[in-house]
Length: 271
Image (cartoon, rainbow, N blue to C red; front, side):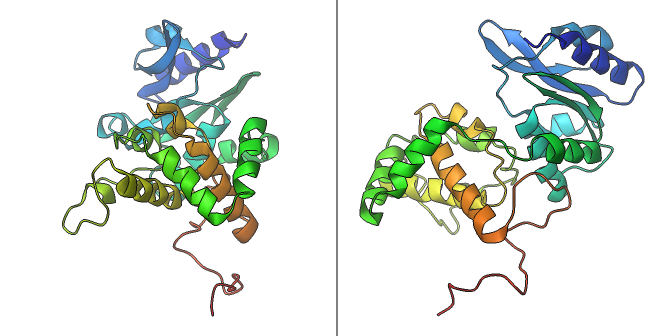
């Protein structure tokens, strides 16, 4: 655990005691796991923990009614979670004053911040979060494939999918009340856990996250079949930055890449 966990606990207790928040959403230890902690009383903050095993993106809980009813609340947030909060702010899912950030990383505690302060911290200290080198090596191999080889590769990766939608449940960006994959009138894609439907589901999910995914890895961590979703996520995030000069989760006022346009947008696709 980080050496200054007491600072996190003290800050959480102060927020609760002063009535600034009704809930602190953080992590606690359960065996070898780190699971969400929902702290509503100052005398409960001793359960809060933070270390490198705290990988779940807690921003995903902000779409749940029982959590939203506790706003204003505080979230123990590592950089990727902070980026999710910026995304949710930009998409009008949360607003200034509803969420306070207890900003942390593996080096320490960066204080109690509002959403504007969180954006400032992200851009000053975490403007570039380098992806894992092994992921980049895998991606380079995929990019060297022919289109046919690439299609075969992804078909093989998606084949074990059981359509449990754990990836969707873990993602803070999947906040639709009803997902397209659950609609059968009309039915846009097959709901069966078979090759065609699996391929369609994962591609639709990935493109719905274009310009939105903060690469927290929660979807891949949640997948019981070990599908390498971050390969697809990182490729799309990189293309979004290259084509639209947009970095996901850094600007709480950013317009969405999908659904917005500029007069000087590239138009090479028009024939």
